[in-house]
Length: 209
Image (cartoon, rainbow, N blue to C red; front, side, top):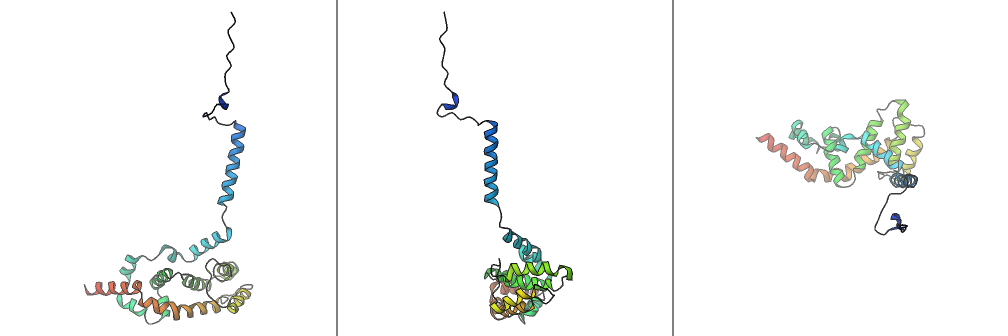
């Protein structure tokens, strides 16, 4: 007696059943997904370069002000001297940090960052001037700069010409414009801000203890 042949359905065609693809198909699919991810995650080189540059140039602004440490090394008299002039404020490392924090609250931290970058640039060795000048220009002065500073067209064009053959004074003109802007605009508001007044009051209170 011959046994009846039993027709088995193909499992990969049954609804609700899922099976992995063949190794070849799986490999091709994996490559496709990796390619898609690479394209989606491909960074904008210009933006990333500038962020790296800014972190290396101004680490104290990236990390923020350490209030506790500042109060340990500052005196109320020293902080009061910051109100005498912007020059006195910027001559102090902690003063730079506190003022930078204030400017960040006003969304204008690019001014202090540019000013500090220029101060650092002036101390640069001759063989490194070209590379550093180009980085500062791209970060702050160029019309598409990540943190474009507010300078007039003439100063912007003049600075662009100077960095072609860079010297330690290539950014002096633009730096003076930004310094004047901070001195007339941001600095008076800083002296009336809670950031400055609270720090001063805390130090004065500690002095009386």
